[in-house]
Amino acid sequence: MALPGVVGTAIGLCDGVACIRVFLADSSAAARGRIPAQLDGYSVKVEVTGPIGPRRPPPPPRP
Image (cartoon, rainbow, N blue to C red; front, side, top):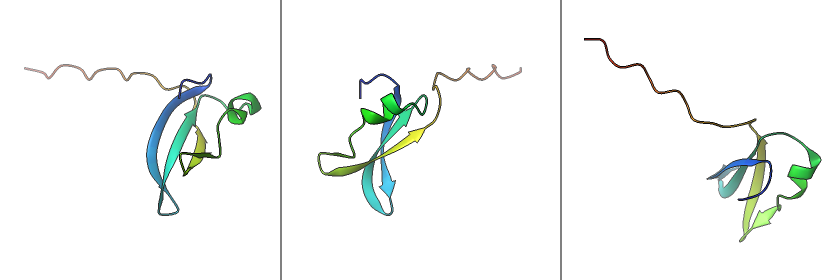
């Protein structure tokens, strides 16, 4: 979803049923208000995760 405040999406299970999960950078009402309750017949679950970024690579193995 290319919406401000959305940092990720996933397909998951909500109460044992397939759903769409939307991850937000913050819990602002503006960000939550842009997310539909259903999309293409699937329920949408919103979760505030904070910013998501790349992880630092592990150090190289020691000789």
